[in-house]
Each structure stands twice: as C-alpha cells, then as structure tokens.
Image (cartoon, rainbow, N blue to C red):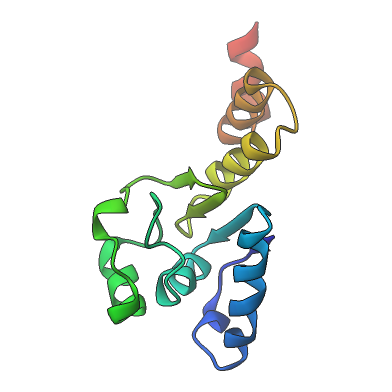
Length: 131
C-alpha cells in the first residue's frame, strides 16, 4: 500500500484511511508513506514503534501531537524501512522506491542498487561509470 505525499493528509477525508492502514499492517502488507503521508502516519500513531523518517522531526511532532511518541525512532535520512513500513521525506522519491523494491524483493540487491545509481546519476553519467 503506497500513501503518496501531498496536502490532503491533513483533512477529514484522510481519516477514512486510518482503518485501512491498520488493517494492512495487521495482515503484514507493506505500507509506504512519503512526504506528508509520513506525517499522517505520525499523526495516527503508526510510527510509534518503528524507525522512521519524514519531512523533519519537528514536522512529525507538529502533525503527531500527543499521538506521536517515538522521537527516538526518527532517522534524519532520506528513506527508512522498518517492520514493513517505509517512510521518506518529500525529496526522496528514488530512495523511497529503492526501499520498497528491497522489501518486495523485486530483484537482487545489486540490481536494485544499479537501478538507483542509473536514476540518480542519469543515463550519460551512469554510462561513463560502467565503461
């Protein structure tokens, strides 16, 4: 289940997603949340027992209020995967994708790493490096 970023997570409509996320996690379904979707997870207590990241610790605390109790689990890096949940800040689309691909085991770690380098460097720079 992928929760994309954006400003809609701070709305009444978004509350309908809370039981869906809870159900997915209870069934062992991987949940990915990037940008404000990670803040939404903080707001609803889903990050309280895992390592995680997002759009900064202060933002997670602001969104989460009393429901966010895991400052110690915050990692100041682009993307984090822990216990079936992938979180990322809004500038980490590639790192987010890599963490999801690793969890989903879509390819070997080596091929996933090569994909990341290809996308991060761009075609021309990547081709220079493999020659």
